[in-house]
Length: 313
Image (cartoon, rainbow, N blue to C red; front, side, top):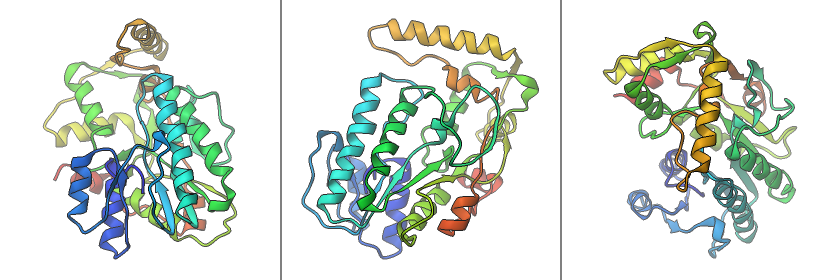
């Protein structure tokens, strides 16, 4: 398993280990790898983008490793997500793997408009950012590896205990400034509790071949109002969210100006708000997960109320 030192990779490594499977977690963070090794799981430290392939044998590879961010240099995303996927495929073939499960992202669907109940066959737009572009290219590489019986999962909005991205970023922004309230606050999304995503990956590992399709949306199956998500998470964290009514065009124009300015600076700092981040408060983006229910035998088990309680327990 690649990316075992990340949020999802660590959760899946623990799940597989607890169920008695031999797991070989791979990643770059030595400290986190050591924590997994205490569970009697053999670990390997490596950077897949270097194309180094360790000598090992395995039945399947789950590729969780990725650079995931709304901002960054194109070259950094390409190295981590495209070159890294090439390295993971090379590793899987050398190890004699029978299946390759790739963790992708619904960001490749993203448009600056409402999109409700998107299916896996939805036409893909021009990538919204470098992250989405690199993950889309990675998917193409994986789908071309028919010899590895590949399955691609596109999980939406991972959250849970140990998350350092979704809810922490949202709460950090709310501490600094009022959040934009656009289009009457009607924007909605679907999030996924970390344990449900790990279970989806487990289901993909065990799915019979051949499958009628290779790509599956994964989410909690609830259309959650974005304003409500922020308010409920803040309440759990002991914060209060301030909202400011603003027209979408103004917020997006400000975000794009921010991006342009930051791209000119030597260290390429992340803008205070990106166009992608702003749009999540303006437009509804939800997924259809029926294919995963039907073909993988997977369904989400943790609703947002329970997931939030577990996250802040």
